[in-house]
Image (tube, rainbow, N blue to C red; front, top):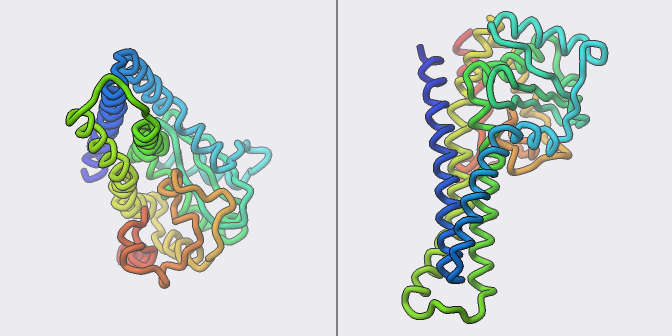
Length: 297
């Protein structure tokens, strides 16, 4: 029952996230049209909002894979990887996702896509080198659970939508400083500038909070669902413990896609993190995740 409630919640949150960013883009377009006394800017903002939403829905997974340096592989190139994902997909009762490899010694993995029929899993070469078969199976089951729970649309779309929040707010802020003269003067113009400044300050924080809301709870749920899928919680628990001990960052580590991965890709030793860093992490501490998994055992 919890899984179905989470699926329904993810669909609502995805729609809400689209509406929020859509409205934000239009609001900023209105602000710019007011500052420059040019209604055409608002029309452009509406067009940009529509195109941004369309690109986010259909291509955000391709963007995430490209940013991470992932390349698609088949059964011939990666037979064990293919077989594990195929068997787990059959057990979960979902279509087999496309499988990708990231040439990176840091052990990590993520799932992406817009639905269970258009999904992908990407795994680093370092994960294959570090984990045994049962541990690798646990990680793949975790990622398949993100697909099965419909986490992937919400998590993947946030890559482009959160980036849009930062981009348009920065554009608005810069346009206010670059502006010289104009037809709108006085207190109203000052109010619009104040709104722009507040927006520019809050936008990065809003984007971070969106990613936090998307990621942390879903990692615990995917851990539990993945453990139930393999019937071997210790496999994923041991895999997470090994991943935690690898402290070097991924070569393709990126703030926009960090929340997609099974663990933070920046190589930070959680034992050395401050309480503030932990709060703003896109992932819950691995020791907490391992503890919950071993309680399942």
